[in-house]
Picture 1 (tube, rainbow, N blue to C red):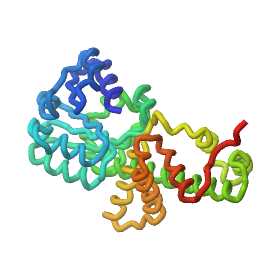
Picture 2 (picture 1 turned 90 degrees about the vertical axis):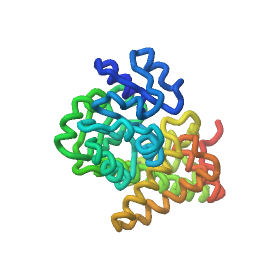
Picture 3 (picture 1 turned 60 degrees about the horizontal axis):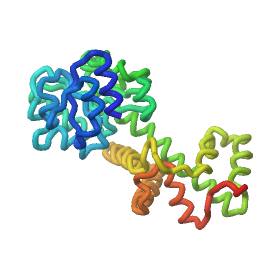
Length: 286
């Protein structure tokens, strides 16, 4: 996600310095005019605004607080925009540390996947001080179509995590419904045909794609899905909100990771449901 976002910033004429654990991942950005920084500290040294776009809390912690992290270059007046899907309490903890050096922080997780980043049509959930959000909004508008100020710092991730929790938890119910039907002897395409004309229609629109079993070359990996659902369950636990359904779905994703499905598309968790039910959910062979 960070690569196309950086391209939008470069295209708009901004001076951009980049860092990644894999320098080769930034080669196209360097060709477009970006400068390479040997560390997060080097990349943020002369910046007014620092963006982080990383897999999750451990990676953000390392980039900010680790050796040669962003904190080493933090100065009064800088702003840190974390685009990562993160734990709200982790965001607030980092913001507190950065604030001691005069750096402001907002959380601005993204929805729209790779295609949205490429096209500049992402939905962005922004949590933080209103003035800080307004200051960086022109930059967010370069790659976001729908930008929502959700409230105080951390609420951006509440919106993102609950959004993903609903998507990925409800997906498990669809896989289980398919497994029940198939084990009862009903063809899965017939199941979809009837469901699609019933009150469950809105929930089963992805079934035809599921039956294609295209789990390779993921646009969003199962490992990231497992991380997002787990983070939402953890955020809810910190607020004393019960999440029995999401917690159960989270365990399906964890079992899928154990089975080695992490690098596959998020829908590969259907194979975990299949294996545990003793069925195979697929179209009839022609």
